[in-house]
Image (cartoon, rainbow, N blue to C red; front, top):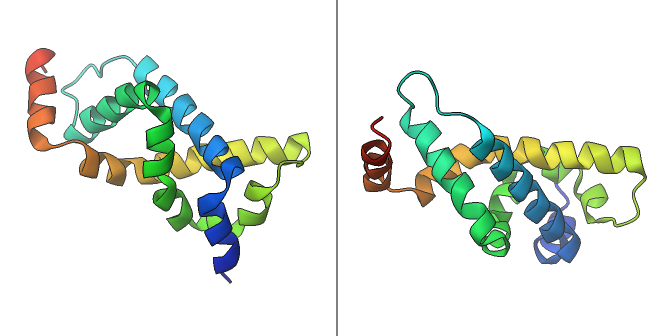
Length: 130
């Protein structure tokens, strides 16, 4: 059962925003560290790369803009109470960090489609001869 009151609190929680902020920065660092694919990169790969390059420039903005995507994630809904707590044990915190990164991996392709317009993908291909 979805706890709508806890999810509403999640949307206002600085703890949740901090978790998402760090998760987004970690995701972006991992994504931008990936080498260019040996074959022609897909449009999705390019969109994800472009979003990953933007996140470190304004991480607060992206933490807020992606909040609804986190709330839509079934794992976030299931673990909302733990995500709101600031005094979890180390094992729980590690699991929550993994959950945040998994959530980002799940929603980021949808977010990137909304964030990156086709002309930007075309421009990236042109700039990188890909």
